[in-house]
Image (cartoon, rainbow, N blue to C red; front, side, top):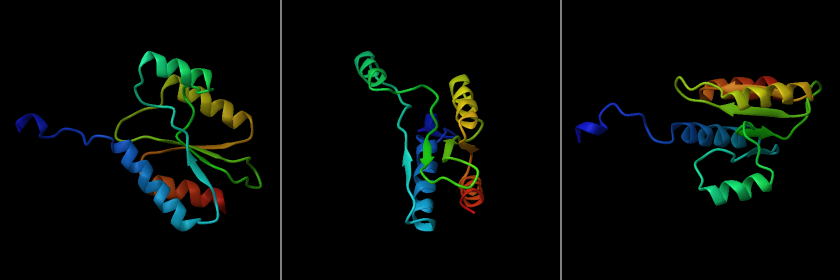
Length: 121
């Protein structure tokens, strides 16, 4: 039992993302948000298949499919705790910005709500 004390909850980023998606669907029921499941561990065959299907390292976790007056859509990268962006994630966000997309990195539901509400105005 002692080895489980003070351990990080498993899948905390996933739980945060699920909470954010639930919040979004309540606040903006007529709008579309979707996950881009790029992460996770896969065996070599699955990774090869997914790469062939177009999986791209660094793509953000969520996308809000609604243009605003200034942007084509909103990419959101979810992080928890002290997690930082990978090199691929930084590169993707830079490219997305250069193509006219709004980008955000959110560490909490409050961060997410603030970013989304500001974007949707």
